[in-house]
Image 1 (cartoon, helix red, strand yellow):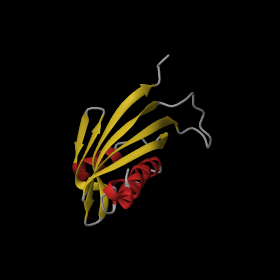
Image 2 (image 1 turned 30 degrees about the horizontal axis):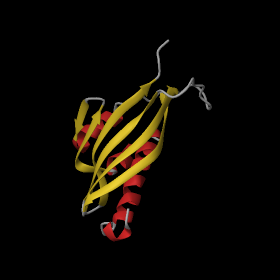
Image 3 (image 1 turned 120 degrees about the vertical axis):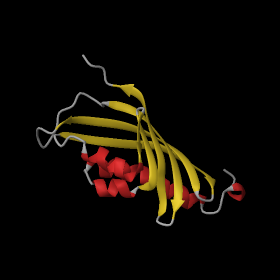
Image 4 (image 1 turned 90 degrees about the horizontal axis):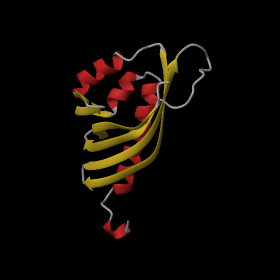
Length: 145
């Protein structure tokens, strides 16, 4: 993009929104649910494969319902953020999702569970950039044999 056409603060917006996407993956895998919630705006919406979760209270309940006996890792890449206003941005992140039963220090797996995309809307709040909406889209799913 031509620097003359860039919005003021656009580089900062991209960096902050990229950090939100990566922080979501890291914190959910560590089960640091207060940190996950802090990434979202108060009226955030998570569209998890067609199940709509609205607001931080519902997000908190969803996070707390995650099984304790599963190890997960979310690997994020190809993060693309576009600022579309002084306090709004859109983004797309590719993710690879691994999960397995927590049976040992090193968990054996056959490959990723899912590969997909996060389609995000971000908003600039008084507390900084936050995720306003995240839609999880599955592109590849592990076969059940």
